[in-house]
Amino acid sequence: MPRPEENIATAIAFLQTGLDQRRPEEAIERYVGDEYIQHNPNVASGKQGFIDMVHEVFDPMPEDAPSPTLKKTIATEDHAWLLWHSPDREPGGPGGALVEIFRFDGNGKIVEHWDVHAPLKPAAEYKHANGAF
Image (tube, rainbow, N blue to C red; front, side, top):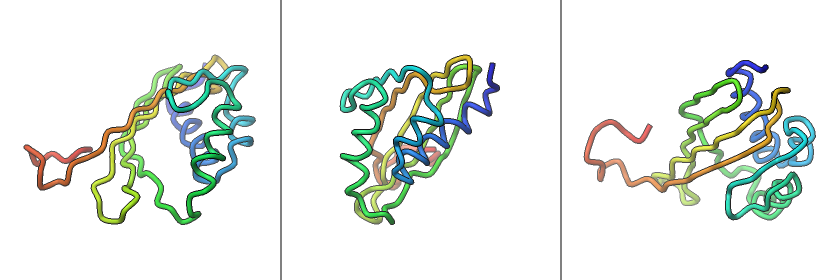
């Protein structure tokens, strides 16, 4: 059974390869198990759904588009949660909070994915001084 820190490393490598480097076929081959169950309602379930989404959404973006910044991680033997600060498309905006959740099989391969995104308010509008992260 993979260790939690290996699951975090695998999830990050999957996203970097598939999204940031825009090589979804390689990401699927290296990091995904026999099945890939998708829970994002905008992406088809299965390996091809991830590949199609990357080519439709990420390929048209400029290569120097800002990437999310990893803020926190939590993992168990079969799950990893990654909390990211995703940048606004317009420079200077507050961006959003993005959570990616992955489930792993006994071989340390990704077999299931959930994600949720919440836009952030400007820091001046917060009711506390804790920040979003």
